[in-house]
Image 1: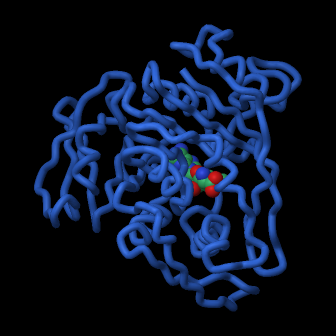
Image 2: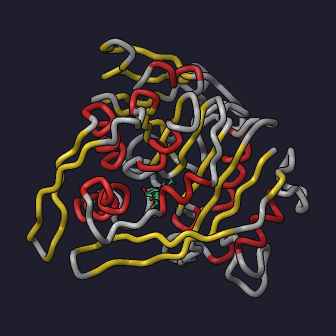
Length: 313
Ligand SMILES: C[S@@+](CC[C@H](N)C(=O)[O-])C[C@H]1O[C@@H](n2cnc3c(N)ncnc32)[C@H](O)[C@@H]1O
């Protein structure tokens, strides 16, 4: 974990109280804390750093609320590495989705946050727009691979072709990318382990419909963003599923309840402050959409329309 992160961190178990974390028993290599424990002096909670990966989740690495789906297994890794980096190994099926999302985040100073970063593509994009960028995800295997890529600038991985047959792919980060301005951390987007008002740019791509408490995530994105001089990008296909999130917690896609109708409209209303929940209010731009692709194996792709909303304050 890059030592820069220490000043940003707050104990996720003590939220909404913001208690800094202190570094204990650290093994360091330059700016990189390779082994150690981040300790909360208030609740006594300890968050491990192993092989440079900090796991700052309330309840520890085995916390009860784990992400649903395939985010820790090899097929999920293959699918997301393809989705994020296929253009770098010149796969003809690659899409420009991440460049299109990146166009929605104009350059700014300060620190960027990519919540639910998976294997890190958009965090690298933020690293080109901000002074420093942090990628956060609940999956330890995704974060370990993203860190490895940032350090080596190159990655070799197994891409699933069919059944147990894989091909080996190697790709290199483009020379103008700045992985030295990027760090990755394991955390929960519903209880972000950061101080309030720290980030000049916050992105949440394709995450809202994957968490059990999407409103908590929106409120956390709002909390950690600066009160002024901040940009927010939320994009999601709104594939609501009761396996992930009880229907009463969906932010849209229902006929009644707290958030009836399309989620994009409800999120725009929330951010603009009209619901009286989000403060200070955001100036919300008209929504747009990006076509995005995930590759499960060589004959199975998911083509997804992800609706985005951009906001500034
Ligand atoms: C559909 S993927 C989207 C990944 C990436 N943002 C993108 O657009 O390519 C959802 C990601 O959210 C992560 N995730 C799920 N629940 C989470 C949580 N509570 N906190 C942080 N990340 C979570 C998963 O591990 C996965 O990487």
